[in-house]
Image (cartoon, rainbow, N blue to C red):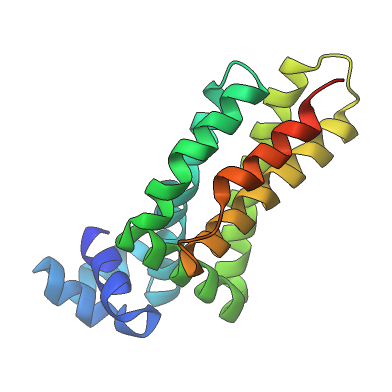
Length: 176
């Protein structure tokens, strides 16, 4: 998997072939076919692993936050790390590109994102036990979209005033 992810970073999905991964991992291409069921299975495994590397750290921080303010602080802290790391930025871009080009990869990523939103909604329900499940799910969708949007925009524009944007979210959360 490390060899496949390295190839993905270096040359995109077109570089991730069973032969290329086997050469990089110093193994037999037949083992890759056996273990992953061929190139489509390898690509799906890569999407799952890259999702774990890119999505899970942010979701974990959100789930561990004691309240909304701590969650915002975590996003404020992690966003520059996430988008400033060239490897993570490249993997994020390739993950999205692969998912939009290949419906099977899109399903894998969609399932990961659904799971992340479900986990976030569960945490929101813990913080707001009186909220109906639909409201928690809706807020989780907005939180995920906010993070995705900020990550994408910050990857393209490192001068993006992320702090100001998150301060705007804090203003929305304040109860006057």
